Amino acid sequence: MDQTSRTTLRKLAAAAVFLGVATPVTHAEKLAVEKDALKLGFIKLTDCAPIVIAKEKGFFDDEGLQVEVTAQSNWKVLLDNVITGNLDGAHMLSGQPIAATIGIGTEAHIVTPYTLDLNGNGITVSNSIWEQMQENDPDLDSDTPEHPISADALKPIAEELLAEGKKLQMGMVFPVSTHNYEIRYWLAASGIHPGYYSKTDVAGRTDAEVELSVTPPPQMPATLEAGTISGYCVGEPWNQQAVAKGIGVPVVTNYEIWKNNPEKVFGVTRKWADENPNTLVAVTKALIRAGKWLDETDASGKLVNREEACRILSQPNYVGADFEVIKNSMTGTFIFQKSDVQDMPDFNVFFKHDCSYPWYSDGVWFLTQMRRWGQITEAKPASWYDETVKKIYLPEVYKKAAASLIEEGNLTDAELTKTEDGYKPATTDFIDGLGYDGRKPIEYLNSFEIGLKDDPSLAGK
Image 1 (cartoon, rainbow, N blue to C red):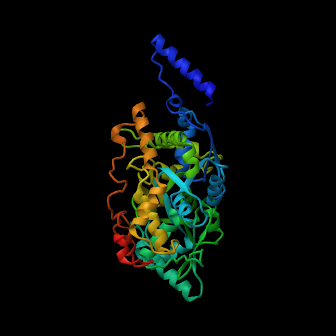
Image 2: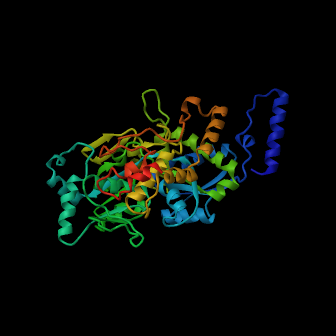
Image 3: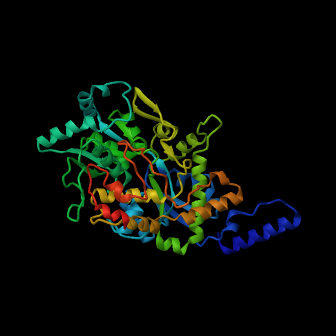
């Protein structure tokens, strides 16, 4: 919105007050954005939903923002476009702002005021691998096997291939993606070594008993069907697509690997955030409203807006998958097999459970996994983890946006995240039962049987 338009709005508002008309002041009048025409990027996954919904339901418009939302071919291209300014901001892997800021891969200071969602991923194996897993564990040879399914039955398959001088090939979407850390976590919890990164091994295959490679999310099913990989970890709808096409079986979701784990964030460069502070608050306001809309339920707990969201997301310019495929997980149902349909109301979370707040403890978890697998090549003291996430996560922006929404009546105080230090309570909600406390990164690192260990004395530094 240009200055002339804002002046006109102010005159109209003043006239309304003079005449006694109860006309609310517009959002744009309340927050003078520095930049009102924005271009935001996303990857074709259902967890881009808050950005898409903020546009389609007019939440960006309410903040005086004219937003173009454009699909990107892969995560690297997306990040590069944010860094160069071709995009103002984007739907990002939670690990991307962290990795870029500390210099893993593409180096740039990226920040985030908002977590887009929790959960939303799965690990799928080919039909052939699933049959072999069933042979190794007869309990899996059931129409409705017990969940969660560990990688225990996969271990003999990996070992047999190693004995033949081969490695089980599996895909993930990006080296610093949640998917990479989740599939590594799942494998390692069953004693399968997924490999270390190092200064000389940027593929992360040192000591690996399986070989992990990068495949863009929409290409996962076709790559599995071609036999290039035998399994993958990806977000929806690309696990449900494997079921729909009859080419694979999802065996575990990331909700089961780590209950209510952070998945994607909204990211911008530090420079952009500094130059456009009001605009960043305005964008965050619109995203919070979108997340709340996506998680709205009726008195029975049914998600009331998800089917509409799925129809929007199914459009070719957004996710572009069939409505029915997107609808499965987005409406609280996850299909492992056609005989094994599970209610998973929290498979996709966009607002509840304090989802959207930028928790420091979420960032620390990603840092611990980067160190566990060697992407962070040198040991760091515990204080470094805390200091690093505070350069990247922007709770002050989130709080300002939330306070404005409360003032406007679009959020209640009860819905505001309450925290003293930005760290979630310690949890053991992992598939291996290990405890995680973001305030104790060194102790957490050293609790794993497989993974790099650091000197315990660093915990006190």
